[in-house]
Amino acid sequence: MAKALGTTDAEEHLPNLSELTPHLTGNVGLLFTNRDPSEILSFFSTYAETDYARAGAVATRTFTIPAGTVRSRGGEVPEEDDVPMPHSLEVTVRKWGMPTRLVKGRVVLEEEYTVCEEGQTLNSHQTALLKMFGVAMAEFRVKIKA
Image 1 (cartoon, rainbow, N blue to C red):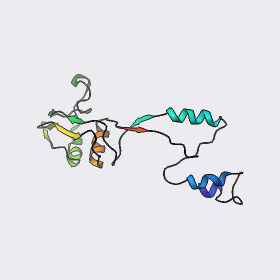
Image 2 (spheres, rainbow, N blue to C red; image 1 turned 30 degrees about the vertical axis):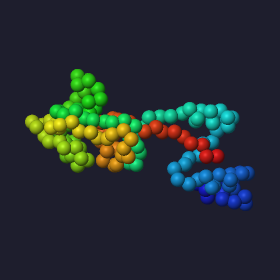
Image 3 (cartoon, rainbow, N blue to C red; image 1 turned 45 degrees about the vertical axis):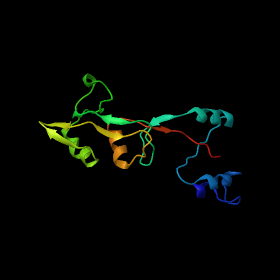
Image 4 (cartoon, helix red, strand yellow; image 1 turned 180 degrees about the vertical axis):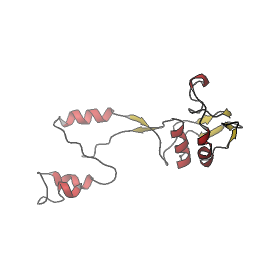
């Protein structure tokens, strides 16, 4: 991106584009608009979306899956509004640390299983389980750099 915009005054495509080059590191993007900068800054200062946590994030709450038949939402919704987890996922959730077993084609937990506790730094297995059960613990925000 930096090369396309120009890294020096002599190489830049339009005036002052080379001043963006130092900001083009990491996960960044460019937004081009005809709108007033104050309008854009105001919009992004309040914009937030709930997202699934990634490894290294801190858990915002404790998430525990109740004992018995494991349901697709992990006890987050009433049983009558949920469905049992497909038996084909049992190997996967066991690989991620849940002590499950198959009983008559159903994924079962002998005792409740705590995926994470509030304030704990999450690892990749925990974040995969949280995503599988539809538990979003992160917040996506856009940080304006320039």
